[in-house]
Length: 141
Picture 1 (cartoon, rainbow, N blue to C red):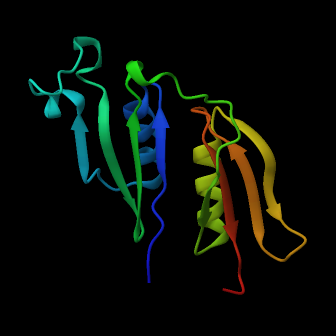
Picture 2 (picture 1 turned 180 degrees about the vertical axis):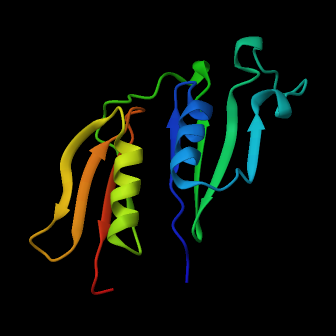
């Protein structure tokens, strides 16, 4: 079965965001590539972008959360647009509460985590980096 691995664009703070995500989910980055790592005469990298993230990956369960910083030459990412949400299905209510609490710290809670009318524990928020998340625990699964 195929896996869906979310990829997020940032305006220069991908490393900060991913260190935060790592502090919540745990684990280790499987890859960090900076723009300076791919610099060549054919693809020169501006000095102010050399240390920014070209690719970063954090395994979460069987999936991988990935991101990059968008080079300034490509324009800014609208961090307040209605992006697709990242949905997390947890294995326990305790895990749902922990991830919701950790990831929503400093962000904007849209739906507090609680028992839902459809029988699961559900919550939704935008984290402090503008990324939208949904956390769900269904005890019947």
